[in-house]
Length: 595
Image (cartoon, rainbow, N blue to C red; front, top):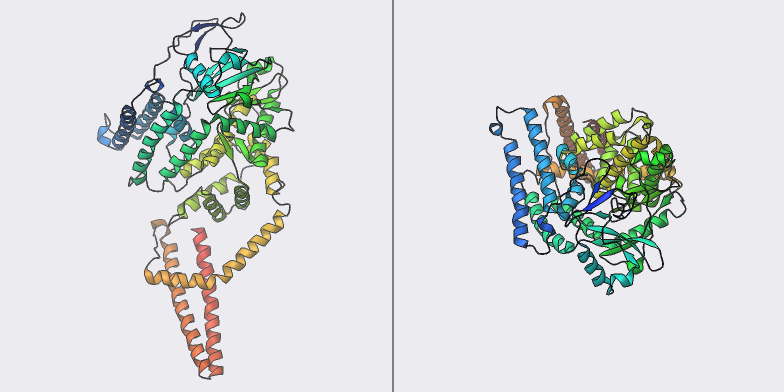
């Protein structure tokens, strides 16, 4: 409910409100003191009661084929009038991104939501596409009151007049998934009723079946499928979309969110009226407020903008780090302020969860970042499934080390979430990163909250507010384990012991790989000397391994034949060679980490 309860649209009969003029088939157009604001809602084909699945398939594939054709022409210099330049290519890409956004609006709710999800995936798409997708406004013409009334009466088996004392037929807000009407219960309580758009699940079923075919195509594409799990991305989007259109699930999310903040008077969540809710209808407490980005209205109400900025950041950090259950779409339309300065959260259809085991892995990631150890960070990202393991992790490791060296040199308070996010996504594009939805939701939320905070208070710094919470994690004060430091030392000691015990097996595996020809060495011109030294070390290691094996076998044969002293001498030589081999392997590993 992006802007459903804050700054509600006044009804036509409200004397002090702006004059409202009703347009046929759509929401209200607002006329203020100045010139009239023209509003002519477009009759989108997907919003019709009956539509052909075959025609829908043609429309979607027409968009995909046009997109592929434009991608093909973008890399052909002869398609540029007056000759190819990089500036012309960037301009064409921006124009293409704008066309994608407009076409997505034409395609309707499924693709609007997919576009909004993809606007967080800078690891998949160029920045021009992401910027345009972020502009997608989830505002479409409202459907008629008769349709909303039919859905309510079908779900509850009762007339609207029997359920509610009053029900405003004019929606106070409309989006691609549903619209919201203000109403009143017979008990006198003010409520809002969120009604799902007619035929939405049928439209989702058709569109997502087509989208899966498209995902298969991209998965098997020799260029775009390499290093990308498009089917996995499809499954993730499928789950998120169907969760968002299940209003029972949204109601449960709202209840959970409210319970998590039950001891904080400065956070409020609309109460769910379960008696009047169903999978397609959600009835909530009417909690109006001032939209948090209406800065002048907040000042006029006598509210401290600096305090509100800090409270917004603290509320989200508590969701993420203390509760493990967070609002995945905290844009300004979903956050309002009550007259007494409390934050009001709306719209709980899209929520994120962080499991305890993931939080433990995140703790390891924080340790790696604090130590500026790119190797540890890479391993943690692989365990978190944010990075795919490849044959050559050198470029990724060097990119992360570069960020660590430059980022960690700045004071914590001077860092920006948006800058960190941009740096991370810059190395992610065309690299084997595959950020899960939870990760991208968190980064988008942090960037959004930082923008809102700076709007409220130009001196606001999100990282400064986050510092106490980051220190809480580093000291593991978040109830995971009070003895984290000692546990970390023990864990690393056990890891070293395990590595030492597994060393003979690793040597044997190395020899087998050498025999099979599975070891491949990539040579870069700027690293020729280092690579040649590595080749020499590997060859020396192979020779030492063979000598150790030969002397060990000889010592065994001599011992069996009763030549004890000679066997001891040969065995001692084997041990010396084994020690040299172990030192050589450790030197090779250190060299690899520096590459």
